[in-house]
Length: 370
Image (tube, rainbow, N blue to C red; front, side, top):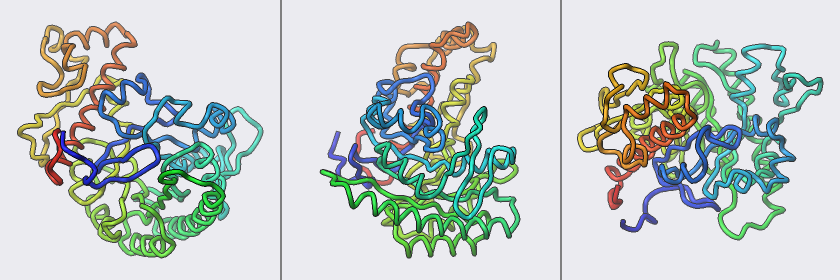
């Protein structure tokens, strides 16, 4: 394998994330059904964890007492922490009894508890840095693309205001610490829904504040489940190419390929691992796929036609699952309800995403043995 140091990527204290990169969602500090060794064997370079959820389970004091997220989870590579704004927004949108939003942030009432939790921009930065994250993401107010123009504008105003407060708190804390190598990075999130005008306003004001990178905020799909291609393209064009941009919540293989072509470098999504646990496995032909059209194939493991199939899930896959086990055997595990199935299926689906990123990287930058 040739030297990869010249390949574009994000330098962190726990290693370099090479672009493009898919990061599995380890929401509560783990990717379900697999451990750190499994993830490394599947070619995973980093993980995304969630501040809002970790604050509650196992709790911020527990995470700190266990040595921070890296030591707690046994993961020695980069970690990005989502602020949790999307999760708080989703819960409150679903049921107002869970809490409310105001100019100061979120007030959240944990289920089964009488106490209330203040979730402010400053608090999210404090928590993320105390966890030992490599990339802090600013608190933002998420919206759905179908929300009213008034709600979209309110989201942009609050997102910019909160980003300023996050920047100030981040700088205050980092200034007090001495980092031997690369220190933590701070990313801001660009909101604006489907409005080109609001996306431009948000991006320009965030650029003026100054951040290490940015994220595409808001739900990236329309009501029919189609990628918001035009708004994603426009948002990427607003940010100078020297800044990485994280396609937050985008991780379907076809969408990863399309968004990388637009200039997005970092991807995360729970879909590939969730699909794996539910018996939907991914496959494609690395030698012929040009990543246009419907190049991705699905293997629904519960289908009776797989009972006697002795072939691997993906013929040209180097993951340990395809190297050793047949579709028929995986179906047997699934029908038996054995815990080995979600582990093997997750390893495979994750490897499909990391393999895809390696191929995209090779085709754009060259010089890597993929």
